Image (cartoon, rainbow, N blue to C red; front, top):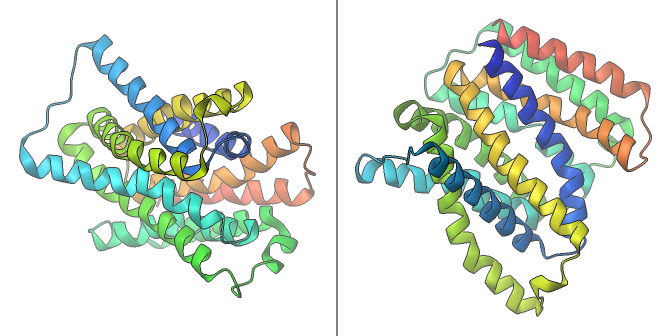
Amino acid sequence: MLLRARLGLWVAIFFWAISFIATKVAVAAAPPLTVAALRLIISALCFVGWYALRGQWPKIAGRRQLAALFGLSLLGTGLHYGIQTIGLQYTTAANASIYATTGPIAIVLVAAFMGERITLRKAGGITLALCGVLVVQGLDTLLKFELRGHLLGDLLVFVSVFMWGVFTVFGKRVADEVGPVPMIGVTTIIGAIWMIPVAGVELSARSFALAAISPKAWLAIAFLGVTCSFLAPLLYFVALKHRQAQKVGVYLYAIPPLTYVFAGLFLGEPIGANLLIGSLLVLGGVYLTERG
């Protein structure tokens, strides 16, 4: 992988790690699906501005590519965010965090099904990184995992994670045809368009007005839109252009350790030795997988 692509990937992981804190601030002041829609609208406007400034508008060659982009908009934007948000309302944080670790595994399985070879070194690196994430989460989180009473939420969170894996693999294939910037941009714009009526229904059902959203929550939503749904996916798929999906997907395991660090810095949550040990295992797993 080119150095700039690797650096861009780490920047994307950095933004996604902070996104959990920003989302927590946003959903405390606004309905969840509305937050998802607003962040997509902001990111869609960023892509439109990007295309306008560069004078290079996406060129879609026929119905097949358009259908593929629409399908990707379901997998990686609106439906993905929506299912995950609803699922989090019906399961515990411990369950959700454990299911989130299956993302890179889903990428490996889907990529292997599509023809990417799984080497022993790749499998070892991904396993090492997974162990690192579990160490970071700690024994308490693992012991809190329970299926009883959370089946619906667990299923929805798992489906959303698996959808991102499919989105990564098939998104790479479409990006190879049309380019990573047009692919992720058009996908985001389509997702924002069909999330608008979804947010409208939610606002009407809850009798909630956008004017009631606090400035702090608007700032969090703007951060999510500009960095987590515009810059981060853009950098992620640019990296995918230069590397296999399996080797890029393993970087997602760096999100939990970084999230714990930022939660400790900004939310005052305790940071233990498990964070350092787990982070080293994750970095070792990423290194091993990249060379697999």
